[in-house]
Image 1: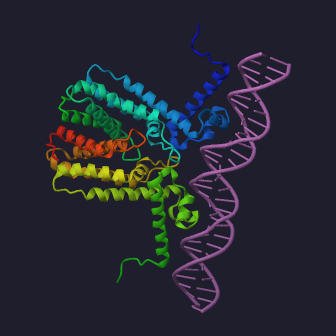
Image 2 (image 1 turned 90 degrees about the vertical axis):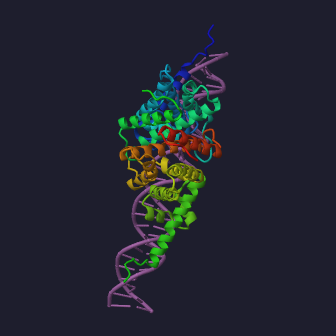
Image 3 (image 1 turned 180 degrees about the horizontal axis):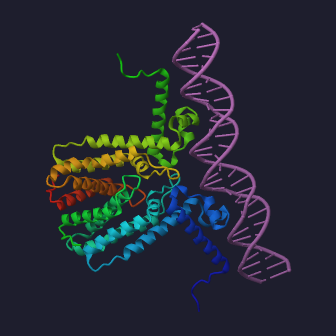
Length: 206
Length: 206
DNA sequence: CTACCAATGTGAACATTGTTCAATTTAACC
DNA sequence: GGTTAAATTGAACAATGTTCACATTGGTAG
């Protein structure tokens, strides 16, 4: 007996189009920025009517939020791939991987962090939670490296450190500002972690 | 003889309205967020037509950019007011003042950092330069505290450190995310600087 | 003071883009 | 094949940025 709910042809078609819409929207955001994303462009590229986009996602924010959700998921997957043998190396690896991912998908990350909802509707909790969870990936290596610290302190430190790295990277990659050369930004991040780990009393190692 | 160009009544009126438009726009951004800023609302509140807004600022981005420009100026003024007697205290002061200013004017700061231009028009250079200059305000105290370091290194460090603080604060105040209580955020920032200064080999003092 | 003119202001009309929904089409089921 | 519920459509609507022909204004010369 098969517990898995069979997918009817109708649902197949529906899902195929759903992912198609998302891929098109993601492509536009990634290449031309969130502000260039238009319902009609997406519908036309997906070969359907604007109404179908609304049926599938409720409103246009729904499309953006779904793309953002998948962006955090992809980011988290990449961060989870960082080797965990050595906790100090892992911390460097998380920062460098975040830098790589941000550099590759700058507009998608900006969409994630900069998109504001219409009126005062709240940003979906699950996305926020996923971002916080991603930022908490520094927790385990920090615990190993600071075995005597309280867990609450480490949780806060994890968030602080990742937020700091996020600030350095997001402003460093801001091509609007005086662009920092990518290789230099990498050094900058590594240097930053060097110093901060030293301040925590940890022997920096690279 | 008077070198100063006299201001005709016509120009007075024009300027009065210009600042009025800006104050209204700033008020809307500050209270309801950039996404709630509408030309017609501004024009109506200023008691003029939408055309006049366009005559004065070219396009709607012009209004936003002018508000943003004034935001950086206000920020810079506040940061310059931080006492400079003791360089270490000055560094703490700059971070705490940035936190205060950000907390008071969160939506204005978001407008400054998150607004994207239509199409691919470049963000005005002078604003970017002003932001960089504000972030460079950590340079002088860092020079005093690290007298043996190269100037270029200090310049980079200044930008890194301020960017890190910016990341901690902007994410910490993101009420979308699990909001960090303000007083706790202050501790968080101070703790961060403690650790980082220690990593630089400087005796933290508060 | 009046006439003229250049600068400025106006708002209706237009352009773009998000949103809705009655009518149509599709496809699952008997 | 007929019935019906669901999905799809796209024209109409709504919200909002932008333009521009016309009206108004205020300075200035005669």
